[in-house]
Length: 423
Image: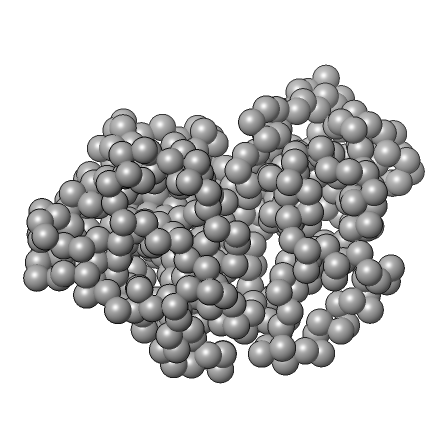
């Protein structure tokens, strides 16, 4: 028997399968990558040798209002490692700078004080000015129209800054190609209407709006335009391992430094598909598997290698349930997901409904394979989302074998579906 361990919340789940049935385990090489420097050293060295940009302390000279865009609670960014040296560099250039840490929530809920302390540490929360972006209620400003034609509306605090910088991390992203870089601005600090226009059905359906692709990706191009127009001058982005530790860091120009980080990640995360009747995936554990909405990201890795009409077993704790009322309504109100998809594709980009993109991608996955869902979410909720609930990996595998009609079906395992680019 072969044993495969999957992250599940802050725990793990184990799947044991006969060796002759396991076609392969698709992992990012980050699992084996170990730099000879600490996280702090990696960030400090990146700051000392920025890519296509003057150092941050030079950029900060003479800049009074400085805004540092930081990630929210849904992203496992090691902010305690990144933010303090960025603050030091800014104050090295201008000790009197008025710094605001602007939390890029996108369209997510606002962070609690406890979450802020957990992410940045009590010292920063107590000492620094922190503003949490709200896509509906924050002061917003229109800065033009993106290549898509959608109006670009962003947080006014960021746009009014004398210097706009951002922290973040780079991982494969299931429709923007990669996270990080330009995403700090859009969707990070954008108004809801701007996010909806960018995430329209036409763009989500585009063949290049896929994991690991940014060239000719219309979603990426809109995001990059927004970041440049907003004046994002400098980024510090890291690549993290399975333990959420930084193993690589880039700093500098928001586009070029980000691209360098993407190239590094691509060299380690790209893995060849191993088509199988049954594919088992996860969302990498906490914090990315807190709800079903987020878990669709890990499903897309399985989608790339499962055989048509096969079965995807998805392990995601989902203690917060479905993760979005709009998403849940769109998926649960209509029994025929084909009708739901057809209605989405008829909508103009400026008529995009909240969370439509996630439902659209989910339907694409469901049209290729049956999804069996191992979670802490209520069984009825899972069924209403067109999936089959299971109590554990063994229960899920037994159900999968019944669906494919074979107790000897091939199995491919993806321990962390958000960490790989399956091609």
